[in-house]
Image (cartoon, rainbow, N blue to C red):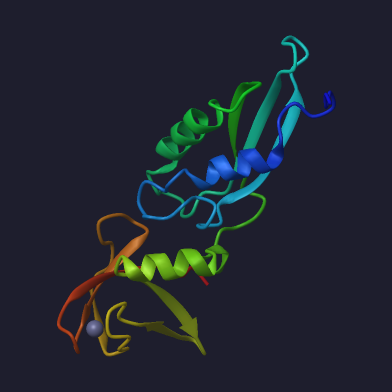
Length: 167
Ligand SMILES: [Zn+2]
């Protein structure tokens, strides 16, 4: 049976995007929640060809990871059969927040020692990813990148990184 309507399956593209890891966080860009949508448009110039557009909302303005994400997405999605062109489009119509990270992504970040900062009743709450204590101090506002802050756990006496909440 020949399916001559869709030459590229959207699920395959999502699976492929799932293999793209964020350059700054050890999780997939899909778990990170930055991929908004995928569009497939037939490429009339090539038999069975399709162009793929991937819309991405960057995590934090000023994060230098953007170019690397674009490169990785193009490299990966271009490997799919019948994909003739891949374009990554910046999408600012929605805002990325920590809440967009999937539960799986949050658990994985925690395993890697990265905490989430949360604003709760107007107060910032950060839990140590190792011992879960909230008895922590902020060491450095900027951390290794603009997206991360360095904290120090007063209970287990280890430093850790936390992602900044913009809410
Ligand atoms: Zn701790």
